[in-house]
Image 1 (cartoon, rainbow, N blue to C red):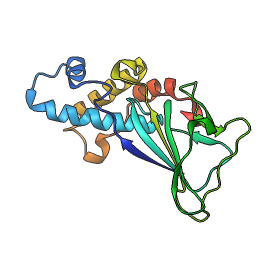
Image 2: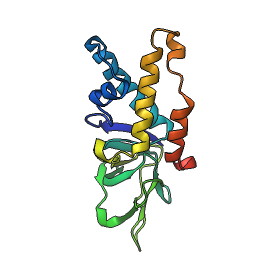
Image 3: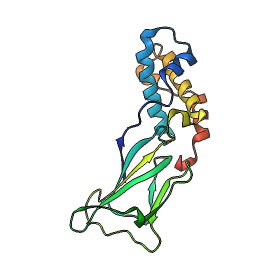
Image 4: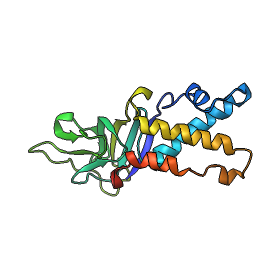
Length: 192
C-alpha cells in the first residue's frame, strides 16, 4: 500500500499575515522566512496527526483488491475513481455502482468495499500497483481547518521563528509541549 499526492492543496491553513499579526513581526525582510516556516509547519502537522489540512487529491496504490480498502489520509472527502489492471493487462475503471464507500467521520479512515451482491474484479497477479484509488482528502479551505490545529501552527511557526538564530539547524525544529498538547486534541489514536 502506497500513497502518492496527485494534486496538492492550494494555499495554507494559516496565512503569512496571520503569523505576522500573531507574533508581531515588523521587519519585512523576514516575510520570506515566515512563508517558508508556515509551509514547514503545515507539513510537520499533517504528518504528525496524519491529516490532510486543505483539500488535495491522493492516489492509493494496491497490488490487489483487499476485502475492504482503507483510506487513511484523513479526513476523506470523496472517492474519485478506482482503476485496476485486468487479467489481460489492460487498465479498467470500476463503475461507482460496483462499490460502496463510507467516509462519514473525519476521524476514521474512509472505507470501500464491493456493493451488495458484488465482488471485486480479478486483477493480473504479480503486478505491482494493480489497483489505484483516487480520492480527495482534507477539511476543505483554511476556514474549515479546526481552530486547535491553526493555533498549533501559529505557535510552531512562532517557536521556530524565535529560535532561528539561537540554536543549530537540527535543534531549530524542536516542537514545544504546547503544540503537542493542541495536536493531541485532534489525534484520535492509530487513525489520527
